[in-house]
Image 1 (tube, protein in one colour):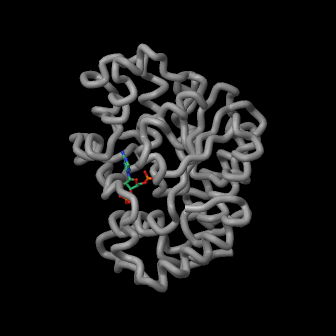
Image 2 (cartoon, helix red, strand yellow; image 1 turned 90 degrees about the horizontal axis):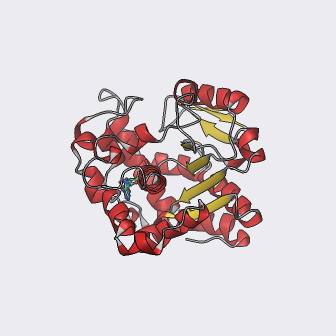
Length: 296
Ligand code: A3P
């Protein structure tokens, strides 16, 4: 099925999920040819769930011995996280031959659509999700920033309807989350399931959890040297969004870096959604998630 809509002139449904035509092309080639290694680390999100933050944190974490002086010569100070951690469902043909091991890359693909080699290997998958209300609001703002200046903004109410019907990049949002939630319950050594809201509340706890999951826990000595806080500070919204590179440059795929940083907070939906909208989206979320033991 094809749908005209708020995200792109057309969106195409493939195996139950929605894609814009150019990305679908990349997804198909990734599914067909991508070869995962057992040592790979894959970061997955539905768009606007905190991909940029997760990329920065994980990059800084696994490379912490390579860049001991985090304040001076760290790549995150001069390069946007999306250019340090490529998407396997967008960039892999060009970038993946030169990437060093263990390979760190990302994807927006639903679990069901991941390349077979990712599922069959022992590579680690970290999934980050976000309250659908904030996810929708963040996506709405993002779409309005990247759309051509000449085009008219899609009505907010219609965009909301579309999102609730499941039409969003790599959506339906709820099915995207559920795929990884179920897999994380089944195989907690393969998939780590994180929530943006919880990470914002206890970032140090979750950074240490990620380190344990990736089998590179912080040593007592690293902790006493303030390594955890150093990484969190470097990857914080305030730090990254104020770096020159993230204010003026574009990613290798031509999106302005500054568009990946807006508010970086929990609960901005309260400023945009009406009471009816909140009730509608909460009802969908409860209906789909509660029976699986998941809530926001
Ligand atoms: P808001 O639009 O709510 O501010 P993604 O990285 O998946 O594209 O998601 C973008 C969202 O993550 C935006 O949310 C953005 O502001 C927020 N974000 C970007 N960098 C962040 C960081 N370092 N810490 C927390 N949130 C961040």
